[in-house]
Length: 181
Image 1 (cartoon, rainbow, N blue to C red):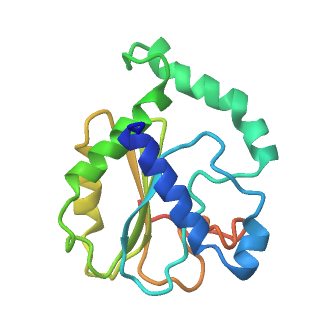
Image 2: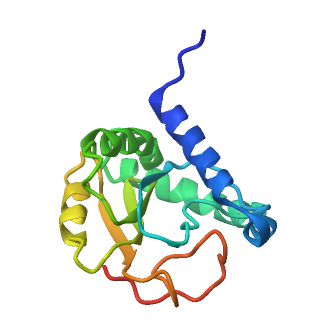
Image 3: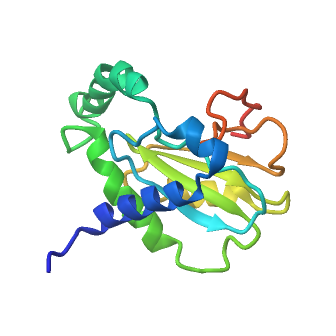
């Protein structure tokens, strides 16, 4: 039996989980959305009722084609500037996702929250919903402490209604509220 790397399994499980969440209209609207570059995208917690699933790294084919050159350019800039040892900053993403999984093992650390993580180009995006009492700053600091993370963006709402600080799978073109970060 073939042994798959943890990063491949994480991406596969994340895509399967997101696909299972899609239903009805959301599925019809999002059918052409795909994680073309296999960027890590996974659920950290799911305890906040009715919190919309973030769009994460999903995009249309046209968006992917539009983004391809820019993505290559952004990815190699880190190496060309001698800020990375790997030739492309996207090569850090799977190990960063694995480190996040390894760091957050307490099953109760995120009770009452619904949070998703996207890792792209050494940037970590934490998106979702949490009660006002949840310490988003502490989460941000923990994510920033993960090796090779360049920047963390916290896009967490205290209410799933109204404009959110992140794009969603169900309504990728809806207006955003101002991010908390």
